[in-house]
Amino acid sequence: MLFWKNGLDRTGELRWAEWPVLIQIVFICSTCQTKYILSLRVLVTGATGLLGRAVYKEFHDNDWHTIGCGHKRARPKFEKCNLLDPLAIRQLIQEFQPHVIIHCAAERRPDVVENQMDAATQLNVVASANLAKEAAGIFLIYISTDYVFDGRNPPYAENDSPNPLNVYGKTKLEGEKEVLRHNIVPVLYGDVEKIEESAVTVTFDKVQNNLESFAIDHCQQRFPTYTKDVARVCRQLAEKRLQDSSIRGIFHYSGNEQMTKYEIACAIADAFNLPSSHLRPITEPSVESTALRPHNAQLSCSRLENLGIGQRTPFKQGIKESLWPFLTDKRWRQTVFH
Image 1 (spheres, rainbow, N blue to C red):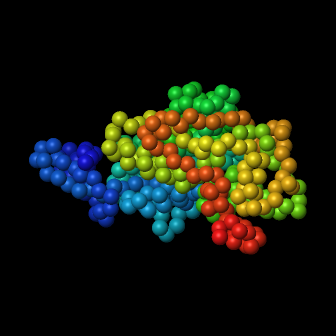
Image 2: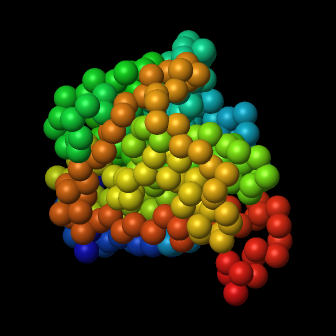
Image 3: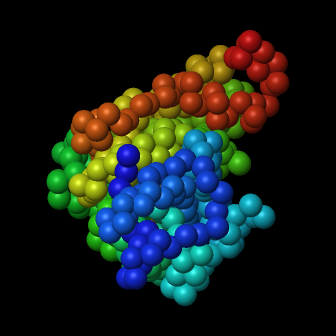
């Protein structure tokens, strides 16, 4: 049984939105002891993006009433909302009255952020501040990044001091300060709409084209993290929070398989029974990237794990689920999945 106080206005009457009843919580009025049944509602920002799509699906498939919003890429099933417009945010929140908000919207490409600082700051900082202000009293999960750390002394706990090396990490850190309740996750992969959507999957064409040699970074340590796992963590954390209001602050989560980009490419090749001899490791730091990146920003995830949260999908399993539609040689599908 959950006791939910945010559903009362100043007159003591229950504010009710006309939404379908799905997952339910029990509200007991402290004055008259009347029981009310409320549905659980979640709002997902950036629902058109790589992580946002997975988060939306995770909540929707587990019987939460789910609303996703986007802006330029908003689709018929998602609400169009400009997060730089406080009035638009306020209207969406007031109409839907979510119990939980998962803030996935962000510019997450470090090199793009370096070249478009003003636009990235607007989305990563100003939009986050707008949302936090308008969502006062609602449990808000903000998705940050391991790039808030410099990568010199991993693994990083939630109370370690941030020291971002690039503008992307700095904007996400400023977003954290605006929101105060957040999850930090590293490099993501999942059900991409195109392989360039993720830094993990972007090499797949080169992996498949084994007729040409391909040189790839073998320096920076990464912990590829499946968006479906992050989505599950968000849902489980939201459900825990509805049972225990003391759950708040910073939570770290990432995959636990440490790899360089070269090792990721080799693992992808192995997952699809493809040759990898054409892949060449580069053991010197790249000078082509616009943004500096931490060498090893491994996160300590013990705080979430102590709550019983943190299931991880093995990388080869997750990458097969994500990339099989992009196989150029369809014959491999039978050897991989049958």
